[in-house]
Length: 103
Image (cartoon, rainbow, N blue to C red):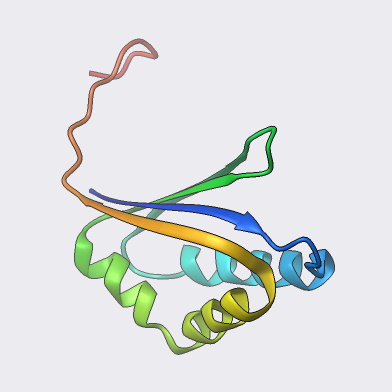
């Protein structure tokens, strides 16, 4: 498993309609990529967002990062959507589980 954590804050003047359309399209593209496992996003009370994407391996995550259409939207994000962001890439994270019948 390869985990990508995208921690971000949106700009005050963001065009939310454009952002939401790009975000939906990127999720559809990511889900179609080989090695995609899951995606979830959480917003804190202070507006910070944590987005988690899980990939089968590092190669799959890097291939997604290099996809031409994804790179165009990344550039738009830097120019129009994000005030700031940090991306964490976690190869082979240590996993502990409890409950839910998982072992």
